[in-house]
Length: 248
Ligand SMILES: Nc1nc2c(ncn2[C@@H]2O[C@H](COP(=O)(O)OP(=O)(O)O)[C@@H](O)[C@H]2O)c(=O)[nH]1
Ligand SMILES: [Mg+2]
Image (cartoon, rainbow, N blue to C red; front, side, top):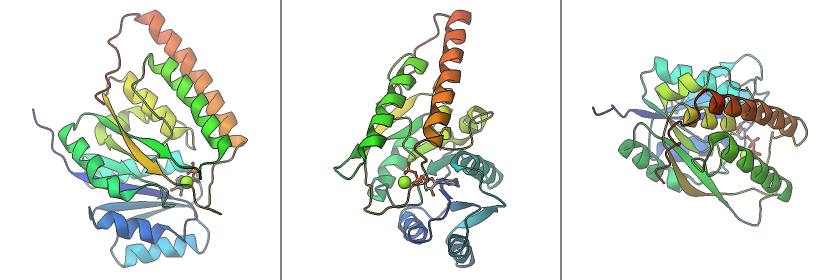
């Protein structure tokens, strides 16, 4: 059976007035279907997003209040489904991702429509040490939770979801920075194959991050605790499940 491939790009944003327009314009050089979920941005973030909608550069949805990156992506999944898309390419609104790789991500998804295509970040010297250490820890836990190396990097927000599988796995996932990690693990548990594509990620001098070193790391630690308990229960219930498939 061939799956229809009808992708859109989803950009969750919270207070990115300096970068959101250039991200959307760069995306549209490759694909014109763009959904922007504004997650309760204050001014001028909100009006910058409104302007994108007015110029018909993106399908814009405002959430009434800030609910977190995960909440915004879940809203985006629902919007994408209602508009009839089959796949969602997620990209950050702050310009950290290398959109030169967008075609490669989409082409990989087109060839592997059932798979989850994950960005595997290649950092340069601009990456803060604290974030890199946190990443190593979360990678370690993800390897335990999935029983293998299906996921190179669970935190990168540059990825392509097969939408139906993502909607299923996203039920009950965290609403904030824990979301990217949790949905990747749950999709692997659901038997979704993965492809991990190296891609450059930059940290800009004075760049804005909503990642809260204390709150988000505590939230992520709690999520790993829940996922590890679940992983053990899964092993007890069915010890010889097929391994998560990693296609690259
Ligand atoms: N919708 C929404 N998006 C968010 C929120 N926090 C971060 N983001 C978006 O998620 C992406 C990554 O967030 P960022 O703060 O850059 O985190 P970092 O790259 O891990 O430091 C950016 O596109 C942000 O606009 C939030 O509370 N709601
Ligand atoms: Mg960022």
